[in-house]
Length: 193
Ligand code: ADP
Ligand code: 5GP
Image 1 (cartoon, rainbow, N blue to C red):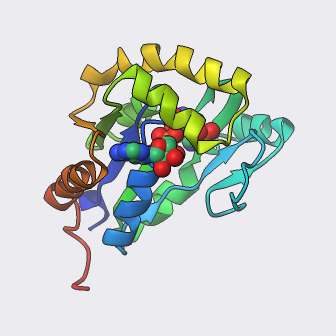
Image 2: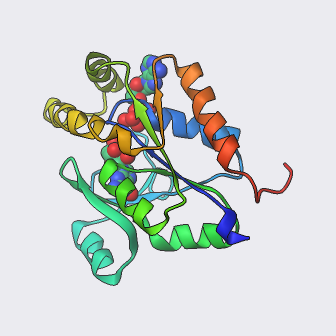
């Protein structure tokens, strides 16, 4: 029954390891659907349209706002990001659990619309480690990194609004913690693998 499927909403400051952890969960739970967001930010090296994001123009994003296409949307680090309402409805109607990798503004909007969502905040071990991880990723300019670090403090201040908080210190331990949350709340509608 569609009402039993679950939205897992994962947020974290940029660089905390959310993408790494979400990818690991999609491998571990093959029937978990990933919500591919729409964004106006340019693709990073290796990112694929329709897989990592749908990369669209600001004009098209605004049209989506007017058309009510977004389950939630926000301006994050100077770019628009939005979750497709149709993707959510299609997956929930099919009884599939979904994983949403979205920022704190978006998470609040999703919880308002889908109050049974399970929210998970991923914390870096420290702000110093966070800065080091963003630099080591080598995907962002110095200006972009500075902006993301400034936003990190504001995002971390919201962590208590989340049902679960997982510190991504040792990657393997963080994966196990996140997998335990998904296994606990999800999967009621998945057929046997
Ligand atoms: P986010 O999606 O939150 O911005 P990423 O998943 O891109 O973060 O991770 C940022 C960088 O930190 C990547 O280079 C990733 O390989 C690395 N990383 C993620 N988790 C850990 C961890 N527990 N220990 C060390 N490095 C990590
Ligand atoms: P990045 O540009 O590093 O991929 O993502 C930047 C931030 O935007 C991250 O915090 C990520 O979770 C968030 N984000 C990605 N997609 C969405 C979305 O659809 N909605 C919202 N509100 N935030 C998103």
